Image 1: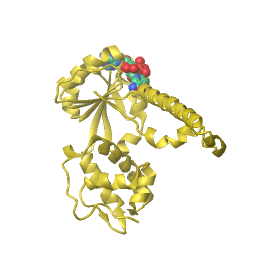
Image 2 (image 1 turned 135 degrees about the vertical axis):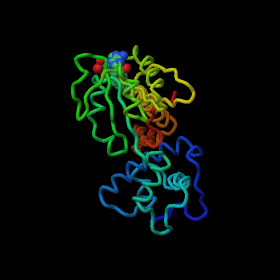
Image 3 (image 1 turned 90 degrees about the horizontal axis):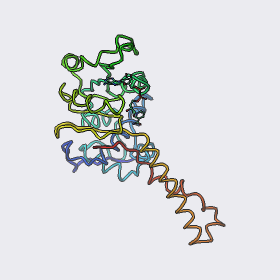
Length: 258
Ligand SMILES: NC(=O)c1ccc[n+]([C@@H]2O[C@H](COP(=O)([O-])OP(=O)(O)OC[C@H]3O[C@@H](n4cnc5c(N)ncnc54)[C@H](O)[C@@H]3O)[C@@H](O)[C@H]2O)c1
């Protein structure tokens, strides 16, 4: 069992936490959620690090941004650490999410139960297809996108998700900004123009698969070169194990920040 950053650490403002640390905090949060569900009270930095695929020194450094939160020789209080990370990530109040475009992707997102458990409540679904408007998707009725601005005034969302075809994405984005949204997540590969005060992120699974493809190609190349440089690798059986040997460097996952 290990201690956290304890006594001398000071609490950093959320804006001072590096983006890479923020990304890892979300991973710690996911594991801590599982531990809470399992009834685990205390977790060591090694256990948490192993469960998230991060080195324990890096984990302790990341958690030091949250201020003192571990007990040397005991570990981290699971519920307390989860609450701390939620506060740092601005999740403690929860988020209200509207989703525009209830097609293949939008319907799948609307039907996914996991967002609510992680503090994201879908409060509004919008589409422009007349046959779809007024139909139920889960507990919500699909609304007419023509009512987006007044409906947002009523629903008070903090995050909007765009899942419309690419040629409609900019117009929908503009309307969301007009409706007062400051955080937008877009599944369209189109680079959307927003005012500087609006935070926009794009998710592109094709980019993720391209990254995987690149990693595979690179690891194959590294393995081939290693075999050429060191014939002894062939006899040790290490040759051809590129992907495993390099797994740690490819475990990054990404969302495109515009
Ligand atoms: N980023 C990713 O990894 C990823 C993966 C799949 C799809 N996508 C993108 O998500 C988007 C949707 O894909 P899909 O397969 O769900 O498409 P889809 O055609 O099944 O659904 C699109 C929905 O948007 C609605 N729509 C169209 N114009 C609209 C408008 N102006 N206002 C409101 N609603 C409107 C349609 O009626 C339809 O219900 C596309 O841009 C696609 O490129 C991204």
